[in-house]
Length: 430
Image (tube, rainbow, N blue to C red; front, side, top):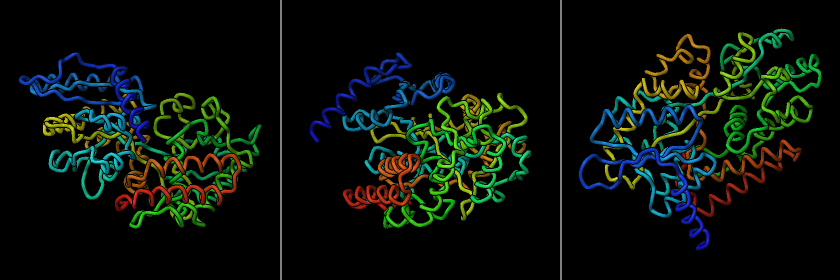
């Protein structure tokens, strides 16, 4: 353990030295403006440009509060946050991937925002983001945008095999109907691989994209009410049956491995299981032939993933009111729309959604907003989440590679339950 802590401390020192400071303003002045250290993940180039502009606008509008931005590479972001926490060097304001909130809050690194953000700002959040940002009845984080997950399709190919096009989640294809559709599409395809599951992605994608399969079947990753456990849930009969269907698609050769990430844009598949971020690329490739559809219904209704990067104020911040003003600034409609114009995500507030040309009432991506209101399931809100997602990712890869589904899920559930036992149950899962 001592070696691990020493390593993390060294990592913290190296990361801080390596990270590019976006402001040259001297920190720690006793007088003058309040200076806030803010960490942000590197993200896409467009996102980095927008956050820099937002910080410049905030600093100009709030001369009494000056934000000093540090951009950290996304790949090792969580490790650097944990290292800084051990070193007692967390920033005042922290951005992080949504599901890690519960671990950070459980470790005592985050301040509740309930009394810091105005009620009007909190009430404007999409319900999905309010749920993701809450733990044990307190709001700890807010997001400027959410995500969307669905099926992108080529309308002409689907209509050529007589497929109906579901208008919304309530009309989603059943799992049986979806399997039959894959076979009809395969009859007209040169290699029979007609579906892209983004198997070329890594890490969190597999939990984000395929835990909705479990929930659509009436199963889940873990219990959503105390006591927290995975056994009997993740390895339940419903979960096994649902992921056997996915394994069947792969075994039958209906899934393109998509090593070049061009399965859909190159015309090799008719359907792509992917997120909102593919809209610009897919639209450019197939134009008006692009159609957005809900994920299949495995028996308990179509479900989808949600969640994205969040903002929070750490317990190291000694001027939380000033930090809250910065978060409130980022959630203004103009600022939300500036960020979502750069990353294509679902705007994180009701007022911004209403003004969005993509996600507003007549927008082509409106389905994602509808799903977030009724069909999105937050990833488990528990400090055990890092272990849960790691175990599920391993199970999915094993299933993809042909391991018996029941065995893969049983191993994952046992690993998760052992971690819960080792940590004396954490706190009650929400």
